[in-house]
Image 1 (cartoon, rainbow, N blue to C red):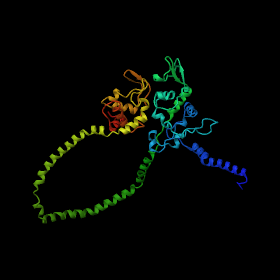
Image 2 (cartoon, rainbow, N blue to C red; image 1 turned 30 degrees about the vertical axis):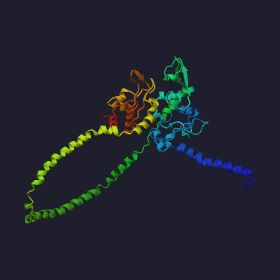
Image 3 (tube, rainbow, N blue to C red; image 1 turned 90 degrees about the vertical axis):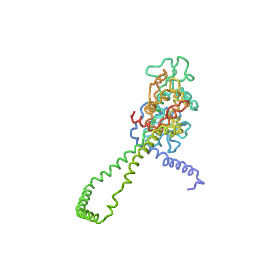
Image 4 (cartoon, rainbow, N blue to C red; image 1 turned 45 degrees about the vertical axis):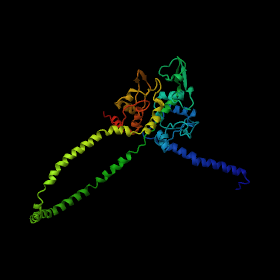
Length: 410
């Protein structure tokens, strides 16, 4: 075997060696993972429309700028929890000429990660606006527009809704923009991208039940130990009685207790101490009565509020809090945001809302619920951000206020 003189041997060895290493290192492990990854509890296969939307997503080159993989890094926290193989169990081949699952993980994040976009941005209206012209909802966006996913018609067909474009992006008067079949499929796929929680709560419960199971057979031993203790007590009772009989004799022979009988000073001092304690308690209660308001103002995390608003709210309500006319309501000067009672404001962020009428304008686009995504601290921070920005000056809230509304208490 002489590679220096036999060039066919050299190239054959190089070629088949490359193919073999590719199979061993890349292709075969990928096939194994694709065939053995189990979906997470609660996951559902893509519908026919969503599967078609995945094909549109790949065909339009969205994977070139967007990822669907959340890394276990602090900088990826806004996109969701770290990705797991079960997240991709239902990402299956698109057809006989595409035998492998689409590479939705991506390799470059020019735009935001889309792993959890169906929860972060659950409004189909917003997604249609974004695909028709991204600048209509994100003024600084560099994403290209996809007008070929839409049609401009003179009359909206029955069963469809026109995309409520802002005036600068709307077609001429009397014309309407509606999504075509490929546009509807792409938005359906986007809304299906929702991370499910990793279930790990069953293990502590199983561990907690083990001691109970172990305690059941050990019951006879415990009863035996209790019987032995009872016998010991019965043996020692005569000795204890003898000791009690001996103690009066010892007390009778000792004259000191008679000399120690008068002790008036401690009894006189006790009422003073009892009278002083209520005064101290009253002072503490007075100081504590104002503590919650001070904590509500001083302890909220403004940086967390900025971050939560930027990650979850700015796309619809805009960075300046003005929203989009007749599409997404403004937060600046909003009566609910400025109300001294923050209950409705907190409940709206927790549970979402649809069809609200504000200042005579009805907003049909639904607002998603954030109860499952944001903790009490995070939700309190974003509510405080909204109640203290853009000229708003309303009473701030605490995580305890959010917990009370989340729990259904008044």
